[in-house]
Image (cartoon, rainbow, N blue to C red; front, side, top):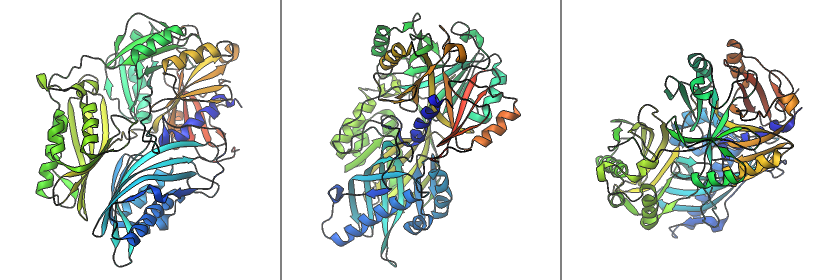
Length: 611
């Protein structure tokens, strides 16, 4: 078996959903036993009047995370209130009621590798747990540092806001509300922000666009945009572009049975990446070109592989304030009129970028985290810190021409707030909504999120706000797993240096004949090939392949076989036609309707190779 990208992909994969970008991965079995820790020095209980209740509540917080980690169905059910509300980033859903949550938990657990006892192979430490208790309810926000894995170890940081209520009959605390965000690159111990990292999209040539779209729709859902020469599929915030020969023939030639794609990198600093790339032998072609709503600069790295740098256009096509559409009805508890008014006002001022007006509707101890804007920051606490965060988001904006500076960076023409739920819990009211930003035509780039806002019932002021990216899976494929760029042994060092330059020296890891660079949403890697047997890399051509993550490979195979897809063998990628089963993952290399080589990967969490 060519472990090369197999182990490779694998590593990334597991973590993908849990911990992109800040994940540090080691190819080694995680030997620690599952545990959930909450050091007493990390427990910040505002009221000092009831220390006994404080300890009971602390144990309940630990018990919930422990039950969730151990996949203890009975314990999870016992710890949830009947009308619990869960805002789950992993599932991109708002789950209302105990039965809905219990039904969804097995699906959520699929994201995580298991240990030898069937529990999620995770070890967690809860940090900076801030607790405000009023009556029989407690509002909490905190971080959770996670390490784990069975065969492969990883790290991640999550943030939670939760409300627990005391069951007076049983004298126990139960979870009434929870919202989470994962994949944060934030040091919870020092409070230091992480560093921005690159992201990438992927493009590949097609001969017949309509035929290719039909092939990929079951895998990826309907295209986000479709023009004469280009189809765009949004895949959990990443984008896959199908490009006709009118565009691709100037860049590369399609060779059936081989990978024919290229990565489109969006680095933290475009000009710096361009300059550093040139110093490391990347030969760029001309000037940036319009491509799918981006400005893209094409080039060839030292091994000859086509690669591209991208940035959003500086001249946004939006010339007026985006339209705001708020759903009239919310499921759940009746929303007090004062809070409904405050909520609408907050959305309007936020859309305008009016920081002062926004903060007037917030408590003095407001806590805010918008992970759709940055994954390198943690909770901003207090009006002073939230003001700084908002000003950084909005930029210097005077609303001239009814256009805000921050919309130039994240342009959308419409913002739709749909499918919302409310809960009145103790002294607070929770509003959880799906939001969808839609870009200007023709590309109409989607930006989907889950928004949680917690208000004080008495003052009708906002006290906690959490916004997380929540693009749902639209087809069989869940998200980008990784992309592999070929390089021969002779060209390895030069390609490595070039990728370091283009990615901004992103954190990386090594495996046998593989090196992976941690991106914001997926790993970009390079793998070793032999030119005679693998037929790549090809000089000044595109030879990068994409691995898509799926939950059930057999389901994907049913589709592939129905389309007449072929299952080639490329020694640097696989050693068997069809599904290959390895320790921790299963994988298949196939050719699509156009002849492009693409990989699908399913992570099983098993620690031994299957037969």
